[in-house]
Length: 292
Image 1 (cartoon, rainbow, N blue to C red):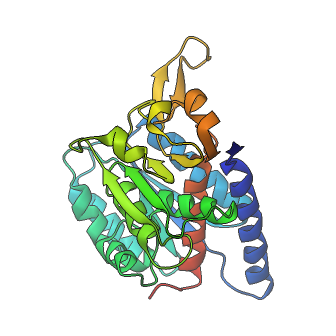
Image 2: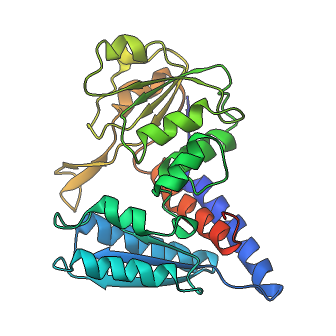
């Protein structure tokens, strides 16, 4: 069993991005600029946005954080999006989800200029990904592809089972794993809460991507010997062994599944660090005006 070290891969990619940014600056080019819009004070969102800002500093990007309280109106937020769309100095931006219930996440996402949509959520980017055109890839699925590539894990002709059908992970991961090329060329099965015989389907899988958000859902008796397991789950589970009172738990019962795997990602330290790095890669592409 080999552990897939997302932290180490993320650190290497940050180094590569920082070197490219330094070259751009040395040649008189523009410093890539990422803006983040944060609404309210959700703990998870606060932590995630803070880590994005830190990551920007590490690689030499410019970053801007725009904050609103929970009572911001949809019209005010749309006006902010419009302003960022038209700000020539901002290369890419994100509106951190989730948003308060009175604001339509779909309406906000669709208002973002797809050429600045570094989260990869805009329908134009999702559609382009589906048919294999240049686009900004959704950060978590993009991070998964990068891990498979960096560890040279064979995907051609393999059966990939994806647990979860979310728009952010499950669906885009399925599209990327079945696309022509590497990593890809898989036969893909997507399982969800209405799927029957999930255990039997998982036992056929060469690669399992678990993205259900159900702690320790995938057990050892669901995984065949030599399978590759990618755990996307990050659920806060109460724990009396940590100072914070909780621990991050994946969708995979790691200690019982790991011995059966050829490769497996831990939680934390697997897919998580790759998500922010994928956002940085998209921002670099946006700065170079690669997506038009």
